[in-house]
Length: 307
Image (cartoon, rainbow, N blue to C red):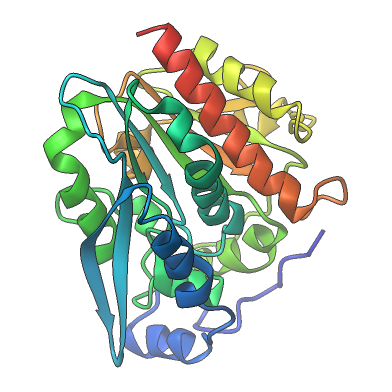
């Protein structure tokens, strides 16, 4: 497991970043993979079977990124809506690839039973740079608020707003990685001028339920399905995962709306955030994608059986 640096290399400990520090951080980011070839081309190949739409466009300097969503072809107003989001944090690869894999291999199994809306890569700039933030050093997954500071988040909220009250289930696909501890959490502490407090990265899959509207049976159904694909994260010696008490096996709870998290953007009865652990020696990239797909399918099956 990667160890966190004693001091983050940008800024002065205890002092929040200003424009100069953010500019220095941005100058260190570089392309590491292609949104065009790994995401857009896959979506393009799905056009013959699903409706595809551009729901927004990011303009960052000389670069532009279309924000794409995939819908059920035969959308019916009398059916419940299932919302799947991935890539809110661009570095969390299986969230993006798992969402695309679900659409390709399983979405048509639910035709005539639900309307599917899938936004597989909410943060394409960060996807290309394998990063958590957008170029303004803003975390989109703390920005799902009416006055959002992240256009990635604002665009998704605009897309979802017309059907928010019709959503039966929303699953937001994420990963927890070793780089959370070695890079992203130290960067957050440096950006905000706060001390860095190390945490133990959990080895395995877990879910984040909504502490304001918990649904334990739904969460457990998802965990049980995923366990057939990859291992479930145990609690640490304090009975916690990343500082939060484990409320059931493989489940913790956050106040989703209070934190501005993606899973809070609808009034869905069933909502959760998946967390896959891709750095485990016990999990391959294929297993990570499969875990996301298993979670989505189990979640939809449970939601349909318990409407």
